[in-house]
Amino acid sequence: MVMMDPLEQMLNIDLRQYHGQSELLDYDSDQLASHYQHPVQVLDEIAHQLKLDSNALQRQFGRVLFQYLLEKHPDLLDNAKDSFELFCHPDTPLQLEISHIYADREPPRFTVIQWQPPELLVFDYQSSLPFAHVCHGFLKACSNYFAEPVIIHQQLIDGALNHARFTMSHPD
Image: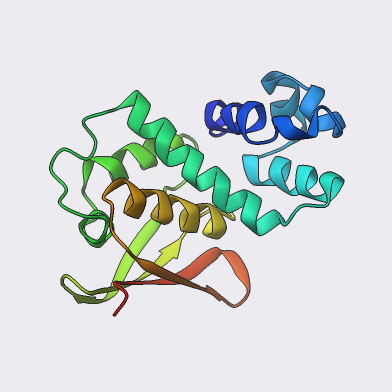
């Protein structure tokens, strides 16, 4: 199972308001891992059972994942000046850590399409997992960490959740 710790954190913190209205919330992480290939499937099922917006829940998971990585590795952003820099250079410590999450799969690729520092970054995100909305939430958490007012636009490529184009810009 990929990323169960942040999923557990999210289930325990962000969904506690539902007080067990979902049978999924009664499972422990080993039981969830045996039923689902990746956290997005768990989140989709929870969203369905609780009548929540699945995309919003996945973005929230991206925010939780960002916080989880920072807690485990507080030095990950030591050399970064802003969120734009993190996603335009594929060898940042944070991106290297993300590749460890994909233990048995190819890690996500970030291909820069347009980079006009410090105002605009357009990049394609491709992953072996359907994590486009998770990536969106991750980007938002990153911009919040740097206290940057950033507008993030996500466009799915061919409707696939494993391939999206992100445009990050500062508001005018």
